[in-house]
Image: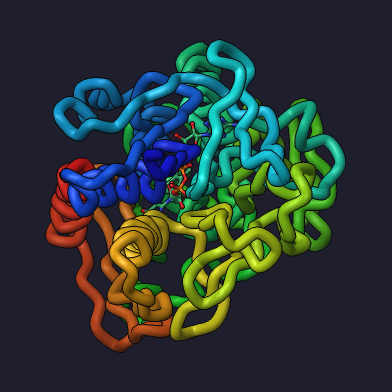
Length: 366
Ligand SMILES: Cc1cc2nc3c(=O)[nH]c(=O)nc-3n(C[C@H](O)[C@H](O)[C@H](O)COP(=O)(O)OP(=O)(O)OC[C@H]3O[C@@H](n4cnc5c(N)ncnc54)[C@H](O)[C@@H]3O)c2cc1C
């Protein structure tokens, strides 16, 4: 009987794992099924561009998987029966059985514990939410936008919208200096870029989000027609609810081969996995998700041929931050993600990031 490998989630980690595993097991008695909620692969790293009303290229999964032999099911996973090894779906065929499961459902929910966020804020965590933000901004002629969160996503969202819509007044609310983790040259460039784009920074912890303002602990109140919350992605509780061992952020706890510590027939990859790298806890990023997917495909292929896989290891090389379409920062890093003095800035960094983002899709789709 065929070995049934089911991959749930066709993002950077899951799609990459599925395509690579298909290639590595060609000719073997292995049946691969990829389950995803949407018909298309979503380039999540471009969702701030979607929010700023740029048209994103469509990536139909059926076309991307053509010729791979992978069975594609477009359905939402509702639960996993870990005893019967069955993934439940909200539509036909209702369930799919596995011998090995690759869990790659990502982190498509916003993370927050501040009053008013759910009722008043907009988000860029998923294509649907980014499109909602785009439509809201599209309806404004002038006005103020508050972007909460001074991390990579907050910087990309604020600068992208500021560049696309100079008629809007952009405010960035962050509890620490935006870009404080960058090398000095990167920090200088970021400050210049925020000034050039007319973005006002407010330092302080956001305590409440209201319909037309954001309250800060130390910097009073920032009036805003639209608030965008970018301070963190959240992992759905699906794995935990299904009885799979998960950490406090709902990510699956894995061993050094990215197998669930409670259910070793389940591999976890991407944002949904609590894995470690050279520097400790892995960063939620496509930079982490892609090597995880590749590793798991290789590990399963090795197991199938009777070999013991080597432990998972990953080292970071850079952080790419876009500052609109014509500016950016590439912060080169050590393997543990800490910054090196080397930084590339300006249009070269913007072009570099665009080239990397494009090549990533080609790379994972094989
Ligand atoms: C605006 C923005 C900018 C970013 N910029 C960068 C960047 O510059 N560099 C970087 O490295 N990272 C960046 N990231 C983070 C990066 O996008 C994520 O870390 C990455 O997408 C994680 O990959 P993944 O495969 O784990 O999950 P995802 O890419 O989120 O894929 C998960 C897949 O699972 C599917 N799915 C989810 N739930 C279900 C369900 N119940 N049933 C069926 N299917 C389901 C989803 O539809 C999706 O296809 C950015 C994110 C955002 C939002």
